[in-house]
Image (cartoon, rainbow, N blue to C red; front, side, top):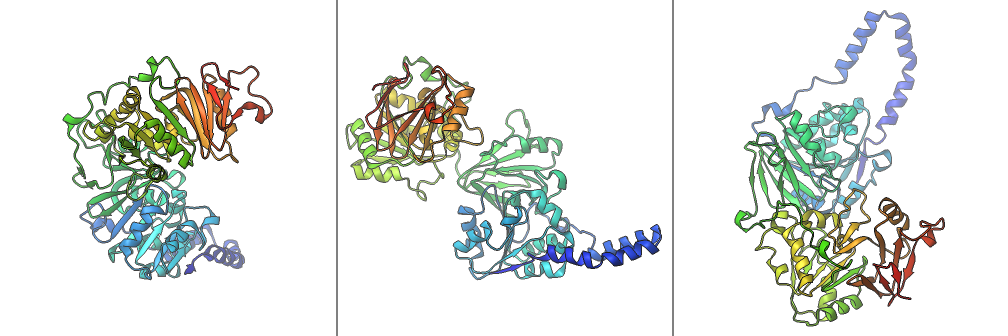
Amino acid sequence: MTSFGLNHDANHAALGKENWGFLMFIWSRWSLTHILWFALAIACFSGEKWVDPTEQWETMGPPNGTLLIHGGSHGGKGADAFLSRINDMDALIVVIPTAGSDEFCGSDGPAVQSLMERGAKNVTVLHTRERTVANSPEFVAPFQKAAAVWISGGVQSRLAKAYLHTRTHKELFGVLERGGIVAGNSAGASIQGSFLYGGHAAGDVGFGFVRNSVFGQHYVRRQRMGSVQRIVAKHPELLGIGLDEGAFILVRGDRFEVHGNSQVAVCNAKRPGWPDDQPYELLFPGDKYEMKLRRIYPARVWNPLDQWENAHETWNNPAETWPTLGPPKGSLLLTGDQPSSAMAKRFLELVGNPEARIVVIPNVNGSKSDDPCEELALLNAAGARNIELWHTLDRRASNSKQFVEPLAHADAVWICVGEQWKLVDAYLHTLAHRELFRLLEREGVLAASGGGARFLSDRMAGDPYGWNLGCGFLRKTAVHTWPANDRQIDEMKAILKQDPSLLGIGIDDKTAILVRGSEFEVIGCGKVAVLDAMRPGWPWENADEAYILLGEGGRFDMTTRRPDW
């Protein structure tokens, strides 16, 4: 692997020092007019007038080559797709890390490592923050042989300040013209639009690889819904595209296709009724979009007659009529981030029949084949014989009577370890959510691990972006899951200070609570922390006194807020 251009900024600074005396000599002897003419000559010499290559395009996206625009990280399925399309591990790949801070801009940066770990053998890093360097023939030379470019994440304004309308910018178009691939994640995604989302001090002009477009990133995960809409409202000629951090699109000509394990929001101000009826149209993996026609070609069409009639109504919470804090019927099993075989056996004991219909929801990545969950293996090993995997990212599926039918006939459900916000986005206040309540009403068993366990509480803990509202199967509680050596007590205290009515429950790895009515029992080899903000004098100065720990067999009454010791 070679690393080119990393010292250009330092060399440029040294050159400036060496010539400082000469410039002072010019300043002392020339008139203001001479100086202005001299400055103009330098400007003309340092770069040509920018000519937009897209003016010759008949398409919105590149007529040759491919764009990969990723809403989140530099690795995962996006990197796999990038290398798959290059189809040559010896081909030259240029990585531009300039959006990142300086410590991540070297040859050992995360984007470089991600590609090399996947087998790429010829990766070159090009980085500068000086436009004079970005305009130099030496700096841009590797682009002329590159098969592909990856622009990694950080702050997109850094990319615009360094490269916009320079030779580097021009050579990126050259990679596409030769049929190559230009990819970018996060900031490297936003810079590809003609309007720069989040450009701030660098202005609102992007590289323009897709004409009349703006790309938002980390869109759903970081709750940025609405930001692209505001831009499009001011500039209705733009096609607004918000990519969640698990999603990426491949763009060729006028069409793009959604890939990954999350969703893409399209904001089209030219659609009749926009934005009052629906500000966004959501696309999921496999969906295609025609940008010039602004038309969706969905991978699956949902029958509107099959949709739950209450899908767009105010949620009517069944738990509000419960006389208890947990389910008055059925059983609730909440485990930490590492469920154990003992918990799987206890789950099957609660179900009572190895032939019972069990639905497993592998919630993490949206792909039940690529990412098999540990819980499935544990249940199979424990003797379960009738398991069905069930999953979706699409709320239309969660509100489809036909799609949700497995939940309607299940004897038990287990929601796997994963990111709780994805569960909220896909299932909260849908028909699927309602069917989980019905499962308990018919004396079924509902289990969940890690983020799934948090999702089943009233108030989820452990999310930095404000995904807090849970499903409400454990009322007036905030649930966290954590390793025993890193209990997030301070985070739980902060939550309870905001709402002292909540009971805080933290579950260690390989530990669970079994909830019936208003009482729970601790199962497993770890501990369960209970934080009660209603206790007189709470919170104590000593953090260890802010909670009590319950071990295996310990019981707790959530109504009286007392352990059964």
